Image (cartoon, rainbow, N blue to C red; front, side, top):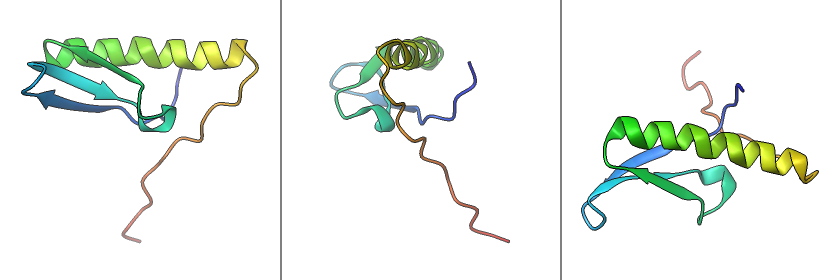
Length: 72
């Protein structure tokens, strides 16, 4: 599935792992991984589940946030 949703991956000293957040899906939507690669893989899986679940429930998908071109 091709989507344009934001995935933010940040190291957490407190959790000692990479924490992933999905801004379009709300502040409580997170996953994690011990490595950056694992965190990204988990993020892809969670994002697919979020989209599939929303569609199955008949809920609208959040609008993806995209960067505007700053140079013309």
